[in-house]
Structure formats: C-alpha cells, structure tokens
Image (tube, rainbow, N blue to C red; front, side, top):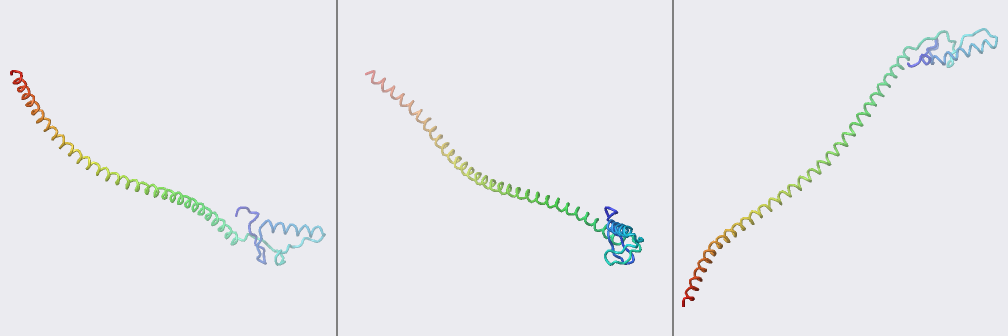
Length: 170
C-alpha cells in the first residue's frame, strides 16, 4: 500500500472495512458532534450497519490483496512496456524485411537483365569472330593477289621494256 492513511481498517464486531482516513474522520466527527451537544462521548457507530464500533484493526487479508494487486499491476505495466518494445522491434524488423525483399526483387531483375545482356554480347562476339575470320580470309586472298600481281607487274614491265627497246632499235 502506498500510504498508511488509505490502509484498510476492519471494524469490530460488524466486520465492515473502510480506509483509515475515512474511519478516523468518521470517529472524529462523531465525537465532535456529541461533545458540542453536551452529551457524554458516545461510542461511534459503523457508517454502514450502525453497530457500535468496539475496536478497529488493520484488515490484513484485504491489505495483502491490495498489495498483491499493486504488485501485479506494476508487473503488468512492465510486461505491457516490454510488449510495446517488442511490437516496435517487430515492426522495425518487418519494415526492414520489406525493404530487403524489394531490394532482392530489384537485384533479381537486374541480374536477369545482365544475363540477357551477356547473352546478347556473346552473340555479338560470335558474329565478330565470324566477321574477323572472313576479313582474314580476304586479307590473305588480297595478299596472295598482291604478291602475284606484283610479280606479274614486274614481268609485264620487263616485257614492256624489252618491247620498247626492240622498237627503238628499228
């Protein structure tokens, strides 16, 4: 119990229970009323059943229940606070999972695009190899003709020179 002024007080013999502050105020008010009237101080009566209050004591059973309820309330507040913290962490984790799933999807799409690009590049490389092979074959053919036509040019030039010399002698 937080404050002794609110402690549960058991009235005897009736067994009704009130908080200490209320019982004290009731008895004090009853005594003032009787002393103002000039009556001898009478025993206060229970506000509930009007029996004479012969004694009062701490209601230990109720005090224990109140203490246990306060303890349970505090524990419940702690559990609720942990639950809120857990819920917040769970929410943060779910948000992070969503972000990571979106990133994974983007990466998967990018990977598929790259694989498609690699396939296209491989086809282009194959075409370039074929083109290079054709160019090399043509180059060899041109080189062959250059060598043979060069020899042919020399022979023709020599023949032409010979013919020209022959004509100049006549």
